[in-house]
Image (cartoon, rainbow over all chains, first blue to last red; front, side, top):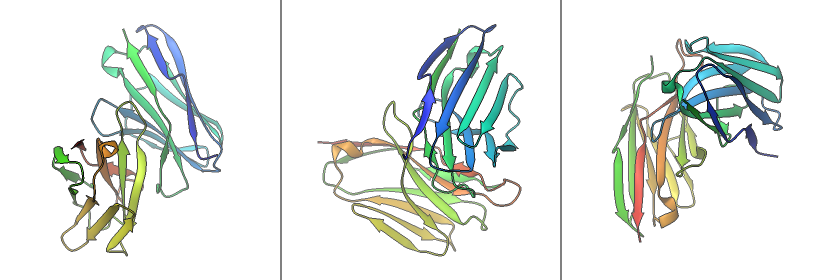
Length: 112
Length: 114
């Protein structure tokens, strides 16, 4: 299995809602990532987990809260988002060292 | 920290022609350089990568060259086909103060006209 699976594919939420994005991989990768991407722009790194521990937080606002329950799963909890947070949220995984990232198909998020 | 510049931002070629996309990086210690292709509405997919101890790597119609002295690397696509149309991102793995994270270029939108 060489896939990273993300759910949901689309999400519309109001600014007072709480929602979660989910990501799963079964490639035995020990590094997992959350990226944010605007249309035709490069992915922007948000968080990196290595061995299920948060190793990089790119000064992301606290309304985004990551969680890594085990080596195969990665969640991103969303609360009180702003309209400017609307974007494609991509999960990725890799072996340690940051090489050969496999990306999921993403969650297209719209905040109203 | 590492900075990656990518040119051109848009590129239009006729089917069968070659396409070249160039990137420069600032951190001389960077040692890993991948290229990602992202079709409209799809995920970024790794198409080729190169490490700093190699000058060139080829995979069918795609090749990447690296000039460490000049700190630039390029993607070459030969015999382009309409399905090569996509946004291409180069990246470099920063080392100092960046935890080995990938730094992406701004992307090149390639259009291959039949």
